[in-house]
Amino acid sequence: MNPDTIIIGGGIIGCSIALRLAQSGLKVTLIERGALGREASWAAAGMLTPQSETTGKEPLFEIGIRSRALYRDFTDELRDISGIDSEYRAEGTVCIALRDDDLHEFAVCSRAQNALGLRAELVSAEEARRIEPSATPAALGGLFLPDDHQVENRKLMRSLAAALAKLDVGIVDNREVTQIAAEGNRAIGVSCSGELFTAGSVIVATGCWSSRLLSTVGMNLEVVPARGQMLAVKGGLTMSRVLHSSKVYVVPRLDGRILIGATVEYAGYSRQVTAAAMNSLMTAAIELAPAIADCEVTEMWCGFRPDTPDHCPIMGPAPLENLFIATGHFRNGILLAPITADAIKEAVINGAMPAYMDRFNWQRFESKQPMNKSS
Ligand SMILES: Cc1cc2nc3c(=O)[nH]c(=O)nc-3n(C[C@H](O)[C@H](O)[C@H](O)COP(=O)(O)OP(=O)(O)OC[C@H]3O[C@@H](n4cnc5c(N)ncnc54)[C@H](O)[C@@H]3O)c2cc1C
Image 1: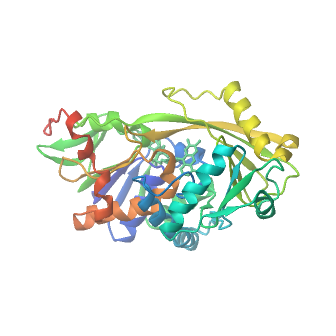
Image 2: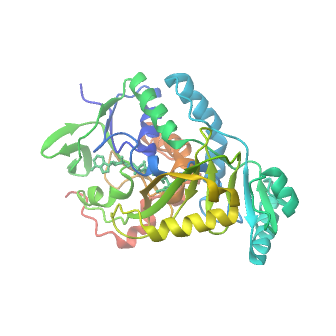
């Protein structure tokens, strides 16, 4: 039997959408070129931090706060279905000022966020170190964000994959979609090297590889890879909260690993982990939390964030009937997965996205579209 929906891409975005559609009673097939959750969604740090580095005026702020509010229930629900806990941790985030400019920025952010009713507490250096003792004694002050949390994204991906299996989502892995199949102005399925899979609707959730696939139906949307390099260390350091400086973040995991990230580089699809990046991340991390100097390096990796010209996602119905897009989540795809999944479910089932998603439609890049809908 043909599925109601084919989702292309098994990262956090495709898997979360599959979850919501399957729970709504749709028959869903998800096609993944490699293995589920092994690209950006595996490489990420798992921070759920819409309040870091923001005054609340940025386009992503509102949906970031909304999605963060969904997270505890999202991970609890996944744990109940899959039996796998994704280590949602609600300890908050501490931003550390190492220069006078940081103090000024923290004051601006906290004033703006407090005015919006959000908790963003300016704290002294002493108080910052009481909240997170691993922070450097050289701190000048801090900004405590008690509601910015984290999740273990690799476990979250395992939990999602197990939940999809329980919900009878058809997973086709190690299979690359080479074309979106269209008849006239309507998507009818996908083609994998000539083999046609038909479905009532098609959702493109292929992260930084979305441009090429969308070009097969004449769409000219720019989604590029923004490489992020990271490393992990392990040692005697006890740490419970995410720490930020203006140069680096440090994320403690329950198994004792401490993640240090991340670069943002436009280097195409090169998977190199470079000495220069490791050096600068490590130097900045030791400046922020000096005890890291004695830890052992256990892992180095990189991944590709899907970036768009305005750094915001592209979500919602495409110009072709029955075709939907959910890509371009750049630095926030882990955070934005629950809200994206809910919104795309609304679009597929009820024909409309919630109004707060309007600004993320593909039409904002319309002037760049040499559209040929019937190609
Ligand atoms: C170093 C780093 C740190 C990050 N930290 C955070 C963070 O702390 N918090 C946060 O919210 N976000 C973070 N992000 C961003 C986040 O990881 C991404 O926004 C998110 O994972 C994107 O999810 P996705 O499902 O769109 O893409 P991906 O996870 O890349 O998944 C896309 C999938 O599509 C598949 N695919 C591609 N083309 C095809 C095809 N033709 N046919 C079949 N399958 C195909 C790929 O194989 C891949 O599995 C980070 C990213 C990086 C790299």
